Image 1 (cartoon, helix red, strand yellow):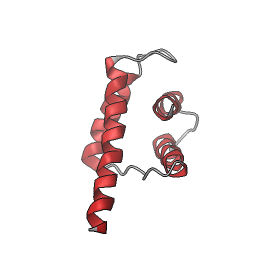
Image 2: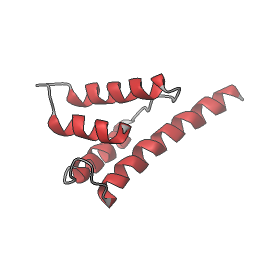
Image 3: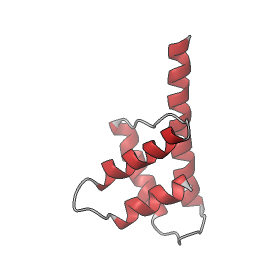
Image 4: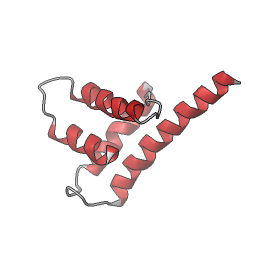
Length: 91
């Protein structure tokens, strides 16, 4: 559900400004409330993230397409990268 919520929030753009930051902040809050570390996007990763979000815009409310799967894979990969960073710091 996190992926659907995040995508739909970004798609509807409820605010005049700051929708991307707000959407990522809410996504990270949901992750942290579930004991999952937040994702951090570099500028390079952010460009890919925006591209994947745009590709995912053509889906229906509960439809899953290959383009939406790209968004799920991208966010999941970023979560795993954060876990790897945490584990490296512990060792």
